Image 1 (cartoon, rainbow, N blue to C red):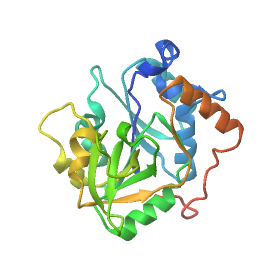
Image 2: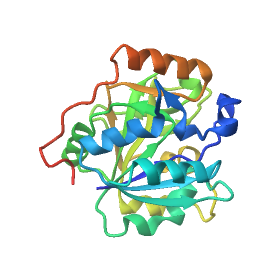
Image 3: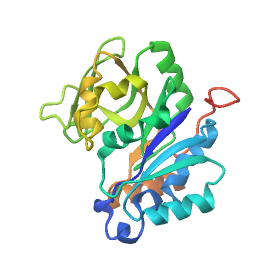
Image 4: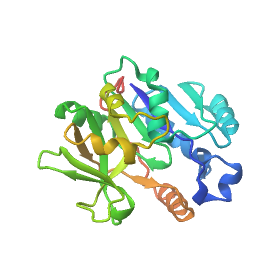
Length: 244
């Protein structure tokens, strides 16, 4: 199975650390964030990954070439950021012929059980599955409304009046039909411009695994504590051969 790992953000809230270090290479207990993602990919047998780069792209490229050569990684550079949706649109040929594919926001630290999410996706027979989790601050997130069958009724990015406390986790199982929902422009965002349109064709996988956005110094400090305390433990595979 192929995945998009969206990693081109500048990490402005982590400055000055990100003046010289790309956000995806920010260390957590001495290990770059992106390595935690590839530990997860390795566990589930995922080896074809597209990563978008922009800020300090040469450092990301050097790190990948020197440390992750065992994976099939396609690096795509964005001189101007295309947004989470624009990246997928420009590189839609990467998943041509695939029945489904993962999309990950790389600024998260997680040990999500991808096998369970894939199993849920296949059992629900929907075009899309969004991983969701409970949050204390729904006005600051992309909020999902579910029905009794865990189908997504609505998705609203940072709503003024949230209908639930279930937020999009930045992890999605997509299908080729996702491309049909893209707006007629090159730069756009999944949360604002695409995910509101998946309602009726998507299911919500409520995850209880670890997930933390490391976008602020406080969250980065929390991630360090959590790793040291053993909270980042990877689940077993869906099957011995991984997801592929």
